[in-house]
Image 1 (cartoon, rainbow, N blue to C red):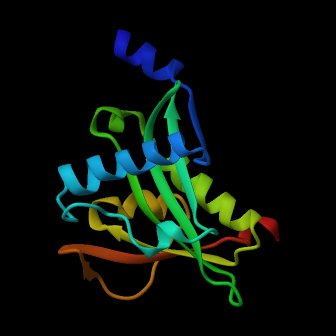
Image 2: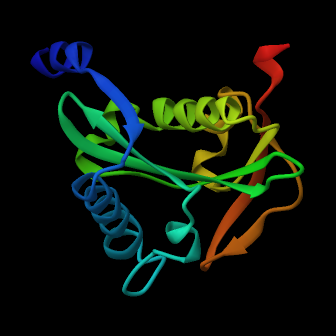
Image 3: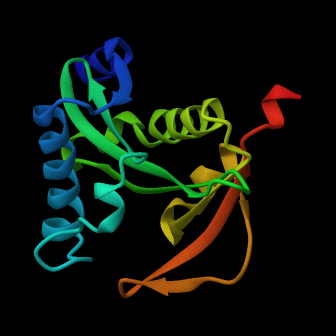
Length: 161
């Protein structure tokens, strides 16, 4: 019962990581999940997108503890296409459902920056979550870093019409 009460009182906040300390925390969580736990990358999961000044690195806080990340960036400015990726939640915080607020924050942020559509490559176990959040599948399942992923997209302007 105490776990249930604690869960109900938990406060989740998502916000861009902007200070050097916040960015380092963002990268640390990604490393923990994608390099150490899932072993999707060797050494680091950082790539050229991390250096793009338009990339938005997001941290999710459970109460005041940083426990999750997502990254988003414009893929095609002219077509107003954005990509979301590097959605990660540390193992100890996964029972709190932080994927939803992270995805919603990424979608809202890209939409607020005049995005038209956001795409992502979703690990198969997370497809149902994304569908519940309004995303749809497009294309066939593909292999990315050795793991099956489903390409998915969401209309960023649907709520503004």
